Amino acid sequence: MTKVILHSDGGARGNPGPAGIGVVLEIGDKKKLFKKYIGESTNNQAEYQALILGLEEAIKAKAEEVDCYLDSELVVKQLNHEYKVKNAGLASLFVKVHNLSQQFKKIKFIHVFRESNVEADKLVNEAIDKALKK
Image (cartoon, rainbow, N blue to C red; front, top):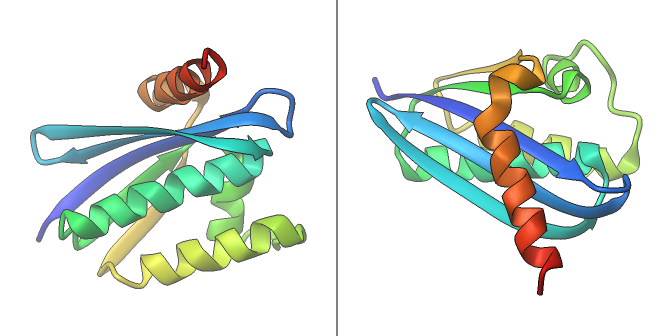
């Protein structure tokens, strides 16, 4: 069974403001990095969009099992059905994550502190910095 470790992060400067997403996908002993500028967004929308990108890449990698590590406690608690999704802007993203998660035999959403998500956070900042320099 192919298991993937996914670290994702999203951030906006200004909330809402210029936003980026970062994903670190660990497949066995290989690591794939993804970063993208997503334009104006909120922090929470960016967190969801990062996770969506990561799950799409995990599907391409033919993963059957995924452990998703995020530093957004809100997003993790929503995905684990501990919190309701009250924001309309997040509801459609929540549904997209839910639909993608059906592609896996097993999926976990795990909250980690920012210090444990440094690489994904770095990718977010690189994506925003690059876009703002244009």
